[in-house]
Picture 1 (cartoon, rainbow, N blue to C red):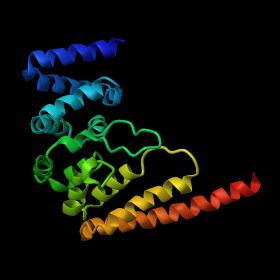
Picture 2 (picture 1 turned 60 degrees about the vertical axis):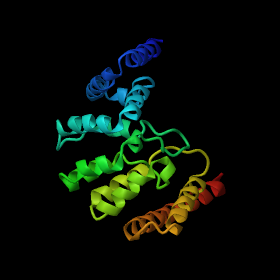
Picture 3 (picture 1 turned 45 degrees about the vertical axis):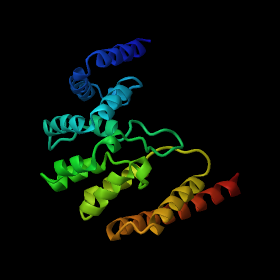
Length: 220
C-alpha cells in the first residue's frame, strides 16, 4: 500500500500548492533515471502523467532539459514513460502521454538538431495514426522527418511492439487492416510511402505465419 499512500500525498500536495507540480515532476524524472522500473510504476507513472496534463508545455520544457543533460546518450526511461509505459497485452499502446504535449513544442525542440532529436522522439511516438489517440504527432514526424531512416524505423518499432493471443496471422491481418484504412485516407506522400512499406512487411510476415500454422496443424 506504500505506493498508494504516496500517490495520495502527492495529489494533496499539488492540490494545496499547484506550483509544486513541476518540481515534483523534475524529481520523478530524476528518479526514473536512477531506477528504470519507475517509468512504468503503477503510481509514479500516472502521477507524472497528471502533471503533464496540468502543464503540458512547461512539462515538455522540463523533459527536454532532462534529455539534453545526457545527449547524445538517450534516456530510455523517459522514452518508455512518454510512449505510455509497458505495452498492454493484446492491445495497441495508444495512451502515450507525449500526445498531450503541443506538437509545435515538440517540433521546435527537434528543429534545433533534427536528425538525432527526431529519431529520439520517433521512439516515443504513439503507435497510431488516428488523431483521437495521439496520431497527430506520429503523422507530423513522418511528414517532416520521414527521410530520416531512424525516424521511420523508430515509429515502425512502436507499431510492432506488444503481445497478442491466438494465431499470429490473425493478429497481423488485423494490423494490416488498420494500415490499409490509413492508406485510404490520403495522408500525404511521405506517410503513404511509409504505410505501403509497412503493409508489404506485414504481407511477408502473414505469409510466413500462415505457412507455420498450416505446418503445425498438419503435425498436430
